Image (tube, rainbow, N blue to C red):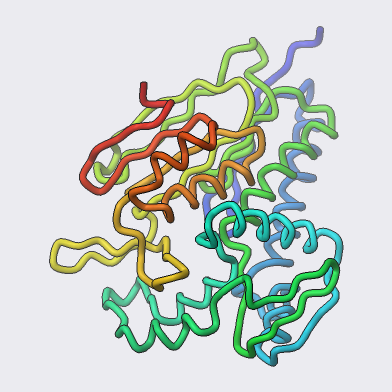
Length: 301
């Protein structure tokens, strides 16, 4: 068998530092595979970014504002079907209509919003208020919005890894801002070493995992937060209350697919004190740490 060389590509996408590491027989083959994967990540970012007025998501949300309806394409329908499943399986905590809460929560401001500001937004939140009958998406309450945060980056990870495999790569890893999918182990068969950072100790590690396959995603209150009077308000918001979760500090889950690991880690955060039990019942390898510094999960044993 021809000797494979290691190649590493760094890029930025979806507001995160990203990398693709792979082994290939030639620089040309590696570059081709990495380019196909990166182009697809950028395609998904352009299609589903809430920051771009020309994105497909912005088009959907303009219709949502009016309380209208839209026929969506197959890819979007797949994401909506998945979001619907997550909503049902999370006791309506995983809700793609809750992104609108960022109008009240400005994590750069360092200020806590007034309860009135949150309450006025809660009226426009609730996946059950949307009539989703593939391929027709109808908004029954004007002023609603959908947001694929928590799904689309993880979906992009899975696609990027799959596209690399289609391009003949058998050993490599895709990492989009800490959401990871393994294409295959190192070329000598050894696992990838993946460090899970500690949510409270900068530079500190919670655990180091050795993975030959599968995907890993993490959710935590350390990415964007406001700290006031000794209380941390993280960016994972409960769609029922409009307030940040305040029990879990971080959750990491391993699954076959990154999109599943990602939604599971987010639901684990949203479940609060019921998180450990819910994660345990789910049966996927996981670890968690709460705001008191207690930790657990099958990967901590």
